[in-house]
Image (cartoon, rainbow, N blue to C red; front, side):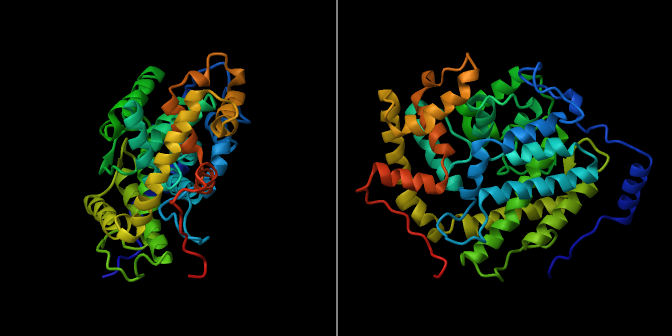
Length: 402
């Protein structure tokens, strides 16, 4: 039986409208004036530029934001403009999260800042690239690479944008691979505790990340919206890429099996179970369906042998070749190397206003990870071809006309 498109219950609709009429505000809504920054003398809240509008502007104008548009979401080897890239994904997360936040009376600017910035640190070639880079970094220096942690590094360390603690925390804690039935914000003591959480992720990897809980209700909304944005869209893209048939018998009945159904029904369920509360909650049936949907996506899409064959046979060894070559170049200190001309010099030029930041003193493995994570898919392939013109590893794309 096909799941129907749910609507908010008449009782909840009436309550929301009555609360709006009477000017009732959500007491859990994060207030602009409470935003914390490392340098509180700069970027002060104003009528023209409220706190989190400033964060949004900082994110949108970063070079790394431009690169979203040529970074893989799931399907890397398809020349098809209808398949989602990471730039569309972050917009979908923002749209879904702001819709939930609007109904719950939350801070929409904070939600948008978190959503647009949450994948700034993602590698080329999606989660496969993230996995390979983490393995190489762990082998080299005993630390893990995770895209959520690196997204905060981009904003807070490499570009020193004085982004608010609340935005950084929401980005750090967004990892949508770990679903929960209930998201209840966990108080964050300040930048000291935040920095300890970041370091814990570098040394503890996934086990540390699984323990992260956003400190704001807005961050909780973004975290669940990340899952809502990809679980159905990945199915839609899998059909476009001809990985699965359009009538693939997915089994979720409450939230539906197609993208539009899943977005609508999960949003309705969250609002029904969360309005007026200090947490974000899914109903038991919707939560079970979401877990089922993610499990089925793994079975039919993410672990598909045809999808993963190119990653393992070409992308993994290409990552290894590039990593080791770039590491040698960083250690050499040569200013005629590509890593210097295309990456280190760029970061140093950005950091010239900050006397306390000597990028060349960073651990060489970290510099290499910074550089590779900044790359788009096409740049990665072009750089590999430049440095290894005789390499046997090549990417074979499925053309528009296959």
